[in-house]
Image (cartoon, rainbow, N blue to C red; front, side, top):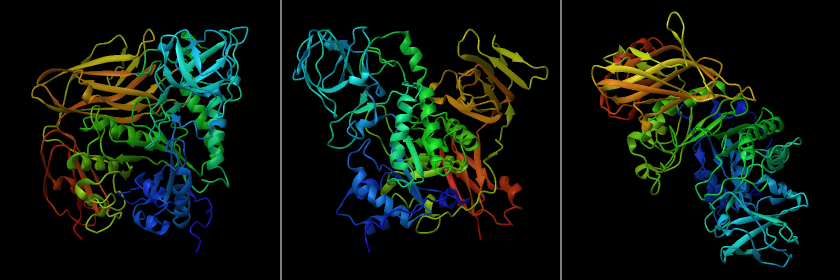
Length: 626
């Protein structure tokens, strides 16, 4: 039999096992790639190793890691053909790419550059030593663009040349390698060349020194500009009868909703309107960045249709808000990228429930559960309790789990929460019989609070708070309250918001922070429809406390706003078991008789344990007695 036997027909999304109402759900996250790219490992051996879970998300093109379009891609295509009910999702860098990959698909102005400098004197095609006005705008090993300047002082990007900076000789001289990436070394008139460094990120591929160039989504013109060129480029792979047409869709890694004007690598600002100057026009063009991202995703959705999934990173405030286009998000770590202690539990729950209810149908979200990043030092494996707590968050929100490390020697696909009482991965919990519920705290007191703000409008029955932006400043109000004893609180409200923005589907964020504690700042997305949100805060002090609410909306409404005192214990009932979480910082005891309201639907089945002790920031996964 031939090793690779051609393409499969397009799988209907409804045929994918990942959309069954059985839990837990799990897929592989890129751990399959290195062995797939290894030509010494047969397809049969590789496929057998990675067959347990319900699919995979993989790098299958060379935009970030050279070589993925060869052996690895062949194995992925064959795997999808042999396993049509398993998810096969392309992982693609939505922020930057290796310019060696399909360089000709883009124009010179489709990349983002720092404000640069101008040449002194003329430049011949053979010149590698170039004199410029200021070499401080460069750093060693920069990729640089040279753009001719016409007699009107305008930059002619259609004739731009890409060069590699080899060294900075002094304050006015650089040495470069000319005409790289298929561009032509040109002649430039005296003082008529503009040179600027690419905004880039270091190479990701092992052994590669080529930086990844950042896209400029602000480059929107009547014909679509850079966003439509990126769509066209991707359709050359994902479109009908193309190499990856059998894939079920694509997930865009690090695709930001917007980008800043500055970059931590240098003092020079970013030239979003690519005119060679730092000016207020860059601010205006920077504001088009999210419009360009919207154009790109909308055009790709139009080309791919409803039969393909489109996802993007979504666990940070500057990441995706394109709910009308995207089927869901990847959360790389959870609740957010830098919250390695799960202090912002509510943010993760609110975010995933909002995506579940608002995303393009069918909704599909997944959480990568791997080593957690640190701002200093290498990423570390999470503690066992925090891994379990994150898994509970996924199960509470109908989210897929993508295991990406081996805890305590276990295989990546045989965690105890995946196997239940069996040896291999299975959907042992079964179908959910409820949404996420909350056990009533022992001290379930309603906390009185007061709000004083010029932005506030209170209706007659005090059940609806209306907040409006003033003087074009972000909404910012403070709720004041007192606690008779130190402890935990939960803020509960049905939130909605509106904004005067250019595309109607854009949503807003709302954050609440206790006592200016940034580690416990929790958020939710918000739009014109009411969304039930919860904000859980731990270990607040006795006496006076404050909650600071901020939002980028023009107006916000909070209906039935309450502050409740007590530890919050969420749980969810499934056909074959129950998952109970303790996101607090304290050990709690749970009497399972409090779940008795569900016993009728459980046909008399009981829990194996009647009284549970759940450690701080931990979760339990219990099966019912048969």
